[in-house]
Amino acid sequence: MSVRRLAKEQPESFAFSEDTKAKAEWWIKKYPESRRQSAVIPILWLVQKQEGWVSEPAIRAIGELLGMAYIRVLEVATFYTMFQLEPVGKTALIQVCGTTPCMLRGANELMRVCKEKIGDKDVLSADGRFTWQEVECLGACSNAPMAQINDYYYEDLTPETMAQIIDDFAAGQSPKPGSRVGRHTSEPEGGARVLTDPTLYDGSRAKKIKSLPNSQPAAEKAPA
Ligand code: FES
Image 1 (cartoon, rainbow, N blue to C red):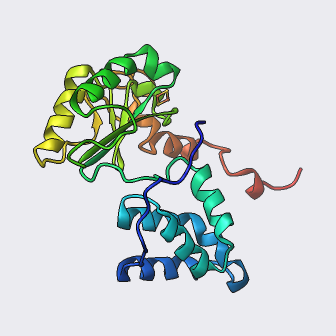
Image 2: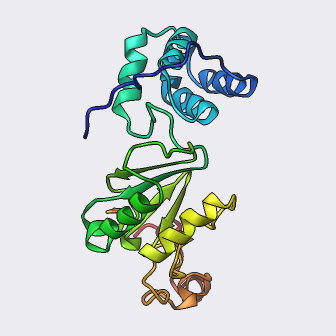
């Protein structure tokens, strides 16, 4: 994991929006009063949703809200890579998986497209709309190569589909997430190849077993 530090340039202050504050209170109430610090991760996430990233003044505000030392909030924010410690693209944050299965299936080419269209890795684009990053495995390896864009996964990507997705975001559209080869969840390409018999799932096999003689559950049988 790379060293994660707060951005050099920080805003003067941070304020919870009404919506963020209400959601934060909801999370805090899930825990006993003496354990309100347990809400630190969801509240960091809410702040990131509000601002797009987690600033140093926001970390202080969360510490005050939860009665936590600022350093404890900072430790959490810098540990988890899902928290962005500097401003990222307002239109799209593109996180390309660069771990082995995705790398073997062409992640390098996806990153080349990102670099051509957006600029250097981890650097906010000149217009402030895009950032792309290389991240570790996102758990969708069977649909490699893939990228998370904002909150959704885009899978089975090629340089062409990656370029199209970026263009669509740039044009103000919201490209449909999911596989680009029509794969259903993580089934093999072309559809499921095993466990395809519908009677495995429609209950008919259980009904047949029930209707057999001596098929009562063991608990109902008379003791020997
Ligand atoms: S290696 Fe890319 S999602 Fe797992």
